[in-house]
Length: 326
Figure 1 (spheres, rainbow, N blue to C red):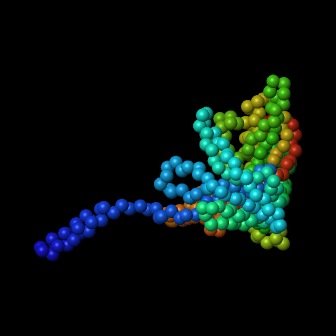
Figure 2: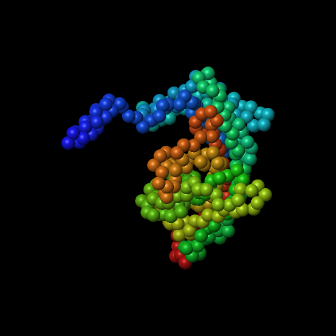
Figure 3: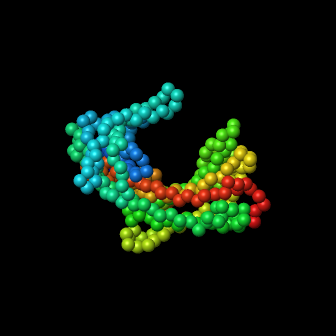
């Protein structure tokens, strides 16, 4: 009996002594700068964001800047210094957010080139990163006849798009757009709609519920001397469904079909890895409950990455109105 009382007293004392100690799952903040920059040759303006690390306990983190920061990006012997600016984001009427950033209009990104980032500020040690921009991708399709005459071919046939990727590309995806003109008040206006991989249901063109392509890892070799082709397909049935929606929306007399456009987006390693870590690790078979991190910023946090996009255009007959299909 004495032994039972003694054991219980010890447990009580341990609990009582420990109840005053607060517990936090967060580690101490690391005094490092956070850098985000994504280069692309498809834009005339390049941005880099630099800000201090923020506690995860803050429900509404501030968009603080790091005063005195100098952002440089170099390629070979050329050097570009970014200037600081404020990006104005309109969330709703009367509700705007000002985001500090660094910008340049003077840096023309070259495909296949290698760029080095340097960020220097009085408050932090210098941080750096390197990225290789994917070279041009090559697209082709054997589906021209289906695209130009979809009602003459079986609905279960695939419109196959073939792609040769850059050796610097780790992930990619392909999007399929239809460009057409609509007659409004006597004037032809250009419009565009994306064709989903699978159209599930819709309430007009503005409310298409479908499955669209997403970023995935390449399956072919990354050897610069190898000839490896990736292939993706869109079913003729989904192409027909979107055409039917277009003509139902505007009427056959008010539509002129123009082009089918396939857009290839290539993403290099750093941006690809960051994307998948930021999107819940993207592994449905994993039992991990932690949140892994990725950064390629030496001495800091964040990502310095690059992406490109290339297009394949197929001209279409002006009249592709629905008719009795095969």
